[in-house]
Image (tube, rainbow, N blue to C red):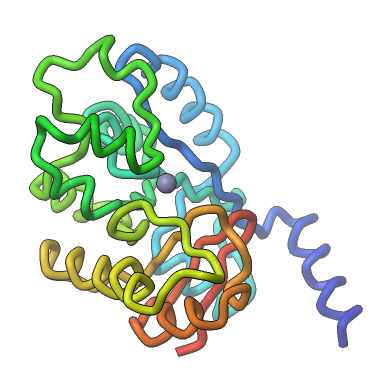
Length: 229
Ligand SMILES: [Zn+2]
């Protein structure tokens, strides 16, 4: 059975029936030409992946579009993921998977840079184009993005879950982040993406919270896990 499964996967790879994921963080204003060149390349070689496409892929174990799927993950909910990345994603017909740190968005504008510095959020070169000190997307912008793209939870405070993480922190980062997003968006949020990857079961307590919260997917370092529900 193990061999048959491996053979199946190889066959799918040969036919181009697979999904790749590429991660982006800041999509800087001054770097938008490069992002656009990358999107042109993706458009020639890959197909966009909606959440429905991902559901179907996991259920049928087949990728039915002509070109392999490409998930473009936009991390942290930087303002430049809205200003720069969003129009280009739409121009080239790709679906962005936006991994949102809810506390970053809820931080008052004047404190966002400090929040970034203390929460492992890359703020390199922001000063080169910042006018008003706002670095995170607003909730209105997240709602705009949600119309055509996928909003995912990336914890409340950009917290890295370890085996020592206390239970109340698990609850805050995994469960509360989902509720905040769902309340702001008035729609289900089914994807959780944690920091530093790891398998779904690498922390049994975290796995329990992810499952209990009702997530359908966990995005790890090198793999997307479908949660049994
Ligand atoms: Zn992150």
